[in-house]
Image 1 (cartoon, helix red, strand yellow):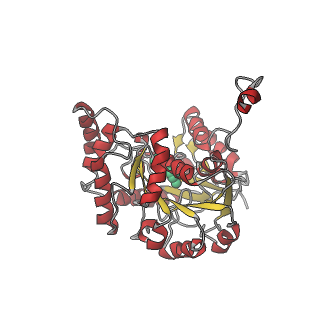
Image 2 (spheres, rainbow, N blue to C red; image 1 turned 60 degrees about the vertical axis):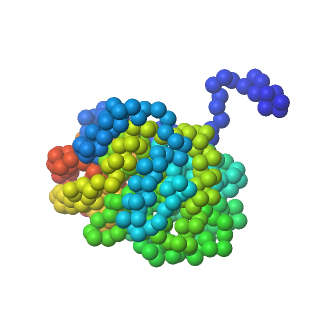
Image 3 (tube, helix red, strand yellow; image 1 turned 120 degrees about the horizontal axis):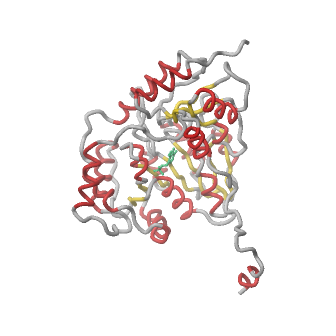
Length: 397
Ligand SMILES: Cc1ncc(COP(=O)(O)O)c(C=O)c1O
């Protein structure tokens, strides 16, 4: 009743903001600017090359053979089984496909759903910045407070004392991301141990955004939260097929979590999306068990190495090659003193290469004069982009 009375006289088009990031995302802004100036788009994180032919064939085949109606709420059993088999093969982990895996329309949705399952209004959730830009809005949309903790430049390691100091009795969740967008860093086992020490006597839930788990370079390996028996009991691990099979536009992902967590997750999922694209699930269930000639990490490592060798001919400074993800951060300190947002726009307009200013990954827009390149591109795209950037000259110091 009170609500009806409260709404009387309210303008039709007045909608209260559900979160603080009410502008257009930087990815949309930079992609639009790239389009407008006919620039090469190294801003948004998506590959510009074709997906595996077998995978596109399987998608068409699934639609042709009649798999076009609603899938089961938790996901196709054959896809959940294929994921469980894949984790056993790659990590030696046992995961129950019925009670621990839920297929989602992408990882962003899975992150939102996990937050929604966990957070109540008034709670707090910690994130490490720079961070993927959906985390803060997702926390705030649930009436919770986002608490950013800065990673330490230039190596972007976690300062565990800072994380510990950020925890209060209101803290209910911590979201972490490894391999990390935008810095390309990866966690080692000791990071997980430090996190476990901090949360041990609390009811804090961990969201582990592991969408780039298969994009790790230089013979290193990804440590999953699922490999940490203690943390696994309190974690959602979140994944994206888009990043593994270069099909970001399919928006297909999954969440792995203990049965009670999965149950809470599905209570939200069943009333938001209910289920996920059926032909894509059939295609992925058949494709996942097959081996590709060149694993995706080798393809991306080749691209990273090619990109880095071309970058040497420019005045950009690379402090640390990306160890994972498909992003490389570079400093333009030798080129300009402009704020990073201005620099990225200038570079797009004047040199025809679009990137993302790293300040966009901070709530307070912290500007370290860094931009992010996506190197998940065809060789000719990278060659042309770097041919353009070679024309940049260092400022006279
Ligand atoms: C860290 C991180 N998490 C999640 C996602 C989103 O994955 P999806 O496209 O499956 O929603 C991205 C995509 O760029 C990302 O960089």
